Length: 429
Image (cartoon, rainbow, N blue to C red; front, side, top):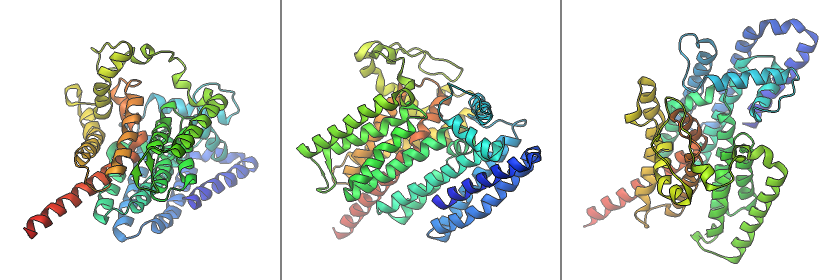
């Protein structure tokens, strides 16, 4: 991954220097975009070859990459025929702000992502293909990290392959990987955090845990809700001892968790304006539960919640709608049906596996499943009250797709092991 990103940046620096000497290069941005795309694709084939541990993995990863390149090319050059879901106003805003930033404009809105787009434009020229290719790279890096995480968890090859196929070919995630939105950056950071969280879970290495809680805080610079895993990780740390492989409440864990929360408050004072800008208007519980539903894809228009009791009563409903939308009774056409089966069905399946597996305390990896459930529920809760539109829900829940894929894989493995044990017991009898 580091090699590929270094190669990408070197190209940007070389092209930046060439553009200072040969100004006319900017007249051929489309041709240059395609040339760079082909060059990077050839190089990335070697990266995939190094990541893949079998011919099957190589074909899955290669197909995942090529289908994202296809979605990227369609989004840039096929928009007049059909605009991909979620590629609309927001993508155009990021592009416009990126252009302005690359030209030196002083912009005080739009968050951090448009600055990344602007830097890419400053290096490569105003090439939308290159900026979106950066997102494709990050999405592929996320797939690599999930693959490594599943290996670290020592899951069976069958489960790993199925999970890899899911992550690689979930239709809506393919789109989110290829268009000009900040989701790919956030997904990568949260996936990296989960990778280090699992490392800590297996080895008790405090450095891994520190990286795990820092990554979502960096992601919060792009969207405040992305910090949800950090809080969940610290709560898990408070109650779980990876050395003893059991949940236990110790003085050491309390002190260490207190240090992490104290550090969090310091970070809030230093960078809070950037990390928590989405929470600026929240001064009470009523500010959270007073939801205004906008757009044709809005849901739960009838819901009127007030105070803490309203939040407690209606949270499960809002969390379900956030995970499952667009639900069948809100379908408006083929796009909603595609979104449900290309996204919602997966998240519902992941939660189903989590709850079903945790019903039996003797099942494999039950402690890890409990931790993953806590992380997933906290992330879902964080966004459930801030989102009231199916299109927005589709985008925001994909921020945590790595958590749900790993939960799906661990849950599936546990159920399979339990089924094998029951079959073996019957054969003995």
